[in-house]
Amino acid sequence: MVVKRTAEIDSQRHDRRTGAIAHSSFTPVRKPTEVGAADIYQHSVLPLILKFFSHQQALADYEKMRLDAEQIFDSALNPEVVEVTSLKTWSLIPPLPLGPVITPGPHSPRSPFPCDPKLNEKIVLWVGDISLLNVDAIVNSTNESMLERNSVSDRIYSQAGQGLLEEIKNEIKECKTGDVQVTSGHNLPARYIIHTVGPKYNIKYQTAAENSLHSCYRNVLQKACELGVNTIAIPAINSVKRNYPPDQGAHIALRTVRRFLDKYSSCLDKVVLTVENSDAGIYELLLPLYFPRTEQEEFHAARQLPNCVGGLDGEPLLPDRQIRIIDNPHHLHADEESLSTQLEGLGVGEHAFSQMQGDLDQQRLLGDLPTYNTEYTSESMMREMQNNISYDRLLRRARTEDLSEISGIGCLYQSGVDRFGRPVIVFVGKWFKFNEINLEKALLYLIYLLDPLVKGDYVITYFHTMTGNNNYPSFNWLKEVYNILPYKYKKNLKAFYIVHPTFWTKMMTWWFTTFMAPAIKQKVFSLPGVEYLYTSMTPDQLEIPAFITEYDMTINGIRYVSASESG
Image (tube, rainbow, N blue to C red; front, side, top):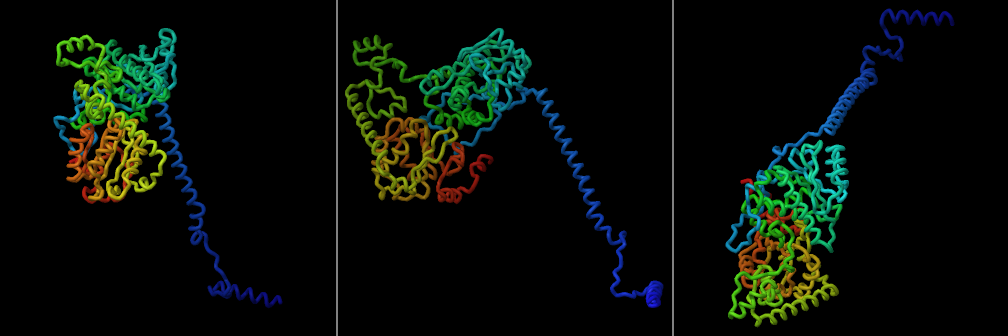
């Protein structure tokens, strides 16, 4: 055995010397420097490299975060002052497209706020921190104790410092609703702070709230003139916290500022309307009504302004409580003239019930003063009473009867609201089969849908798209419907848009509004395309059938309003 083992060892030595492989099962050992380098790189070196770069990125991110935090901290301690000269005036902001250019006619409604480029240069609409504005005076809306906590007041007190609180505590202490108090600006860029107290809003005392809010703006502007300041920043004095509707507050603010500048334009160089993001959209929509920049905006404003735009100073008015006196009254007999002169101041004979005649709705809407004539008085009163009784009867039926066969047609519905928050009523002409549906139930459904909506302002959009002869209602039926609807339907209708008009609609509109419904003639507008509606309402508030959109794209293309404006 020893000899055999020795022979095997000698044989293996010989094979190693000659380089021959004696055993077929021999597996060579891999050299680490040649075969294992990839494995070492993959499992050892690469993770280290990735970790290194990840660490470097983390350091870079940390450094960036640190610098950003320092910048925010520095800006909080040293806020950047905003110069009023760096803000764009209202005259430099291009108007929104208002649809097809319409030339006002001799009988077109006129806006009480005409376009005035000089006034537009004084107005600035700005969304930002009022405490950072470098103006002569800023306005702070607060409560009676002058310690109200709100976003605007908090920023003002924070930037002004402890000195403002001490001045209020030691020298002012309180401020009544509608009044103003003046303090120093202390650490603010502004020299003065004009404090005022806005009203609480309650629908039962709406008139009182409107008068108080008007007094706030009016007194602020008057105090600014007394102080001899040239620039002033005014936030929204009305507050949602006090339940005041933002849009109604904006109307009062803008018309008061406009009336003041009309009279005392030399008193102020700049009025910065400083608003929060939540109010910016409201002011962007309402500013063109009171400060139109073009003739088209002025013409558009005449149709969109509220029925009552206040008095000479923008103060709210109550027409029903005013004593109306006719200028230069004419009478048939001298003794009647003498008696009229004595009773003029009492308004005897001027009451609506003593002089009603003809189309009462037309007189109300157009502001006509009817000639005193007893022959028609009782007849007119009786006609109005009969119409009211008929409408009340129809309203009761509309609330109780099954109108699903009309509502299921889908030709009449509320789509949404326009840019002023007014409900938009859509009427699809193609789906209205005049000769096939029950017209009485159609009227009931109209009353059922509109009665709760017409208590305030509203608009109607009629789509004449792809209609035929069987969709056209008769003039007699239209007149019957128009006459039976109460005064509020005509008064609160702000616009009646006819989209995709034809020769038939233009003739029908002219005839109907000229001879049957002149009271709404100035409220009817024909639009050649759907996109023209977007100046009055956003696309997401307009729900229309697909065939209308497809037809509109076929005849007009897409983005035609923007294209025409840019061209």
